[in-house]
Image 1: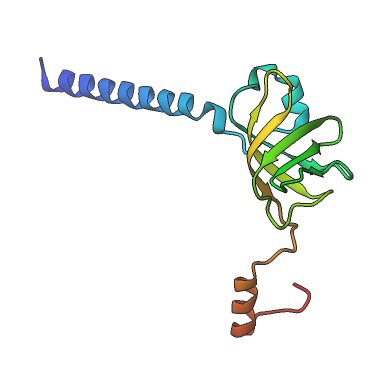
Image 2: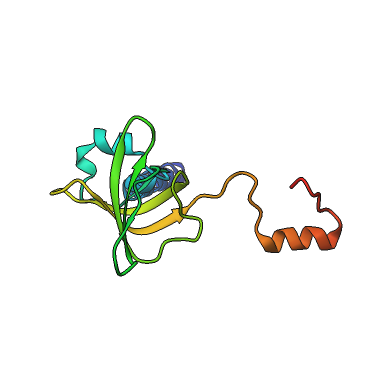
Length: 147
C-alpha cells in the first residue's frame, strides 16, 4: 500500500470511530437531555412511566397534604393544562410552598399514575440572591438596595 492510501485509510477509520463515539454518547444521554418534563408532556407520553425523570411545574394551591409523621407529603403539580399528583417521602426544601415552582426527580407509578418523587427542588424567583453573594457585594461597595 502506498503512503497516501494508508493515510486515507487511517483518516477513514478515525472518522468512523468518532462517529460511533458520538452515537453512543447521544444514545446514553437520550433520556436526560431535557431538564424536566411538564405534567402535560407526562400525560401525553405513557412510555415515560417507570423511568426516572424530572417533573416541573407549580404546586397547586390547597393541594398539599402532610402525613402525621411529617415525612410523607402529597401534592398536585400543574403547568396549567394538566396536573399530576406527586408523593414525596422525606424532608422538603424550605422554599417549598403552594403556588411555588418546583422540580421533582422520580418515577411515575404505572399502577396508580402517581409521581413518586425521591428529590424535590424548589425554584427561586429572578430576584433571589444568595446571602453570601449579597454580603460580598455589600463589602465591595457594589450593593444596591433595589437588588
